[in-house]
Length: 287
Ligand SMILES: Nc1ncnc2c1ncn2[C@@H]1O[C@H](COP(=O)(O)OP(=O)(O)OP(=O)(O)O)[C@@H](O)[C@H]1O
Ligand SMILES: [Mg+2]
Image (cartoon, rainbow, N blue to C red; front, side, top):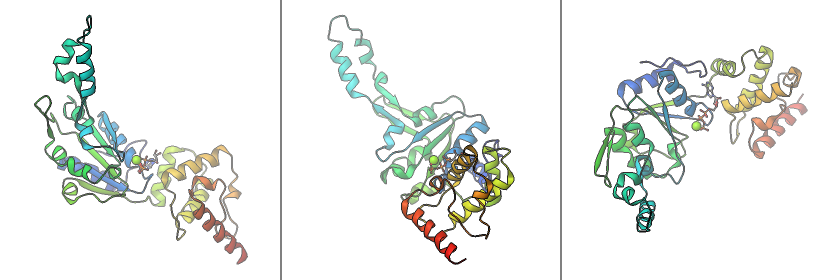
């Protein structure tokens, strides 16, 4: 089975190659890229295109690797065992079987799935540094041991694993060795046009060209703290369409930058807005 892009997702040739290479190698695909460049959506779209269910694990700073395997709910078991002493209670049978208190994590679910399945470990760089190291064996051998029930959980078939990172932390070398890596480059104008077309089919081409020009002008401003990305352009276009902003508001007569309407969709902090306004002001004075 090969991934050839999907109707809702524009995948460049090298991204498709990377997905297929990871599938051939049977290794997790590690995807990096600026926020909003479609890393999370890639996993959703590949899974949908391959007809596989997708299990998602969104990582937070407090997430531990063990939570992805399983957790033993000792508190419930203790409570049930106390309850079973009470006359008329029916928790006695339940307490005897420890399996009733094992809460399965996403890896357990993925490993024991009967059908081929995709697994997304989203934003792995949010967790602490031990997190990727703790998952080495599980992702490599696709197995782990549950000490409480004394069973080895081994993948019936290797899930298709996607791992995304925003590069907030470096990942350990031993972890990187086990992955196939792809960096989603910021889309060039042609690709961006296709992406916009997926979301806003039939958008007037003059409006699109003017908006794209403003967008890339803003992005290329030197010294921006946070460059707007794909999802910000899409938000901005949505506003332009909803508010029926005329084309003239985006086009400056002398080919110089002007403050675009709804700039809050593109620039997300006050320094960037100030920087941008200063530039526009200077441009106007130099006329
Ligand atoms: N190649 C693409 N084709 C279609 N839509 C895209 C593409 N890239 C980005 N988008 C749009 O951008 C939005 C953001 O994408 P997504 O949430 O996958 O980004 P991300 O890289 O996971 O960002 P973050 O790092 O902030 O989680 C998507 O909902 C989608 O609408
Ligand atoms: Mg994401």
